[in-house]
Length: 203
Image (cartoon, rainbow, N blue to C red; front, top):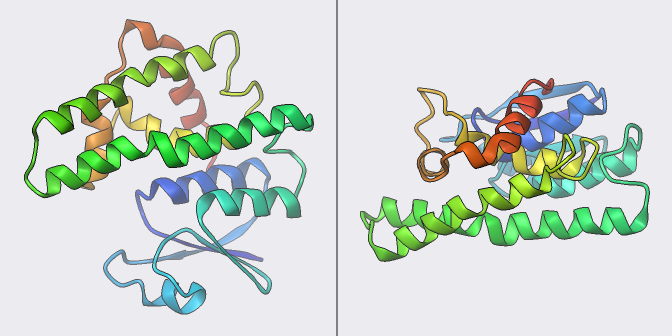
């Protein structure tokens, strides 16, 4: 039985929850109090969720977990069979994790320091403008790279905040995503994708 350390409203946990449900895998969820991560540390040697336990394997980091699930349980696939298409997804995942997530993290850090000046405005503008890129990726297809897969698992938990936020979600990072990304008339495909992926089961 797979075991997953998780806590509520974790965007990275949601990535894995989408992938597990897509592959039809049963998982035992271990709910963690964000204020007490001793169990996570004891299991994995670090404090972040998600952590996946698969037999003797301890897998940290949501993207590494997606790749682990793909290697262990290849059907249905999260990555395209074609090598070139799979490489495109790899590039997207690297860009999303290293570049796209940079602005909302910078904004959240600044706001927590009490700063809301020119830098925050510039980062917010870039975050908003990048919605257009996702809209174009969804041109004439239902998911980011055609069929539902790793790219959708990776991006949806973050982009969904453009459409709404739960009232009791008080994470500064999530508030930044919700308040600094606004869906307009030019984002109808993206809005529909957020709803479509949101209707999918999650483990």
